[in-house]
Length: 216
Ligand code: ADP
Ligand code: ADP
Ligand code: ZN
Image (cartoon, rainbow, N blue to C red; front, top):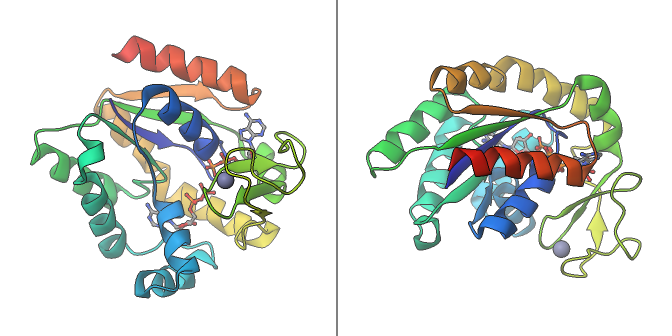
């Protein structure tokens, strides 16, 4: 199963991605996680990506598309994958379609996690992420079992530099301008599915599984 997750920053894509990829045993490919890993390792890619991420802007398509193509070429993507945070522009979506079709593959489902703007700020400012595995927590809605520690791997939780009120507002603008058009793009391909992302995490996951179960 080849899946894309769509939705504004803070919709719960990362949270659902962890649950989906565990259940379906497919790799979770998060471009944000790839960039953050490169930033922490101070690679040339990380140094370039950081300039954009800190301001809430998108990393240029030329950089991002190549990284995803390389990742999708790896052996573990053979039986399916889940993309989280990619594509984010129509240009990226077209490049992805081209890459997949030239490998006799396609996207089965573009799953939109629908969350209105008024929920987003509280979700983002309360978000804490694992510095090692990228798992997402929330101080109020999804606290870890032990304060400040990841339930999965025990590493320390941190607040992302781009999860401040000012940067979140910029990211929401970027979403409206550059990513929102993808909803129409996948609707036209007849592969768009939408779930209401305002409910509790496990309820959202149940609905996601219903949708994915019906698709395949
Ligand atoms: P995204 O990857 O779409 O940016 P995350 O999965 O990181 O979003 O979720 C953003 C924040 O909202 C995190 O702090 C997460 O714990 C919290 N969250 C995720 N899903 C829900 C939900 N259904 N209800 C309340 N909070 C949620
Ligand atoms: P969120 O889901 O909370 O918006 P992500 O972790 O997906 O966060 O992305 C964080 C940042 O990484 C984005 O604001 C952007 O700067 C960069 N980024 C991630 N994915 C892409 C992409 N597909 N294209 C361009 N930039 C990206
Ligand atoms: Zn962890």
